Amino acid sequence: MKKTTNSLAALLLLLLVTACGDKNPQPKPRGYFRIDLPEKQYVTLDTMARYCFEYPVYATITPDKYSPDETDWVNVEFPAFKGTVHISYKNVDDNLPHYVEDAHKMIVKHIEKASGIRDSLIIDDEHNVYGLMYFLEGEGVASPLQFYVTDSTRHFLRGSLYFNIYPNNDSLQPVIDFITDDVWHLITTLEWK
Image 1 (cartoon, one colour):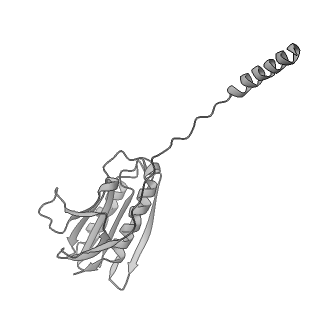
Image 2 (cartoon, rainbow, N blue to C red):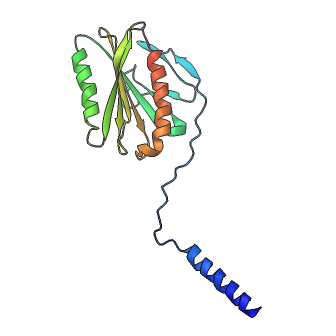
Image 3 (tube, one colour):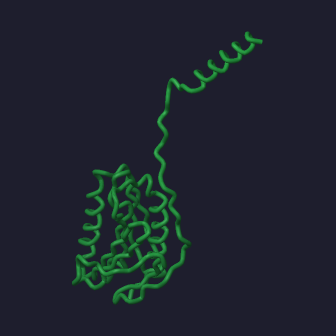
């Protein structure tokens, strides 16, 4: 009986020693907090003099405090995500190439941090809305989404998404995708006045 007990104790000790140690430990991937996304619902912003569009009910519209003289500049703020889509408007008067070039310059500023830039053409003949949307990819990109739209004769509207946190677009990707859908909705409901 003593021999069986000693053998059992030796076997348990051997199992304990071999089970506890991993000779090649692997680091665990970093986890991120779960982000609860609200249900999509939209209301119309119809208080602007030059344009109107639909924006999500979980966002707020605020005037651009850095450009108080520009009455058609607004921010679509997403407080739950600490994100803002900054929207600026300009009248077109034979200066459309200048505004388009400025929009491209704003994209070029992000090339240093971007691992890739994709664009998507915007053509809406029904509402006379044409432009480009840019998707800036990369972990440290400050603005992952920018766009401009115009009717090419009178109106030019530019928008850019920024977050009020350190840019870590890997963890923000679900929110970026969620807000991108809202920006597409904004563009598809945009009407010039």
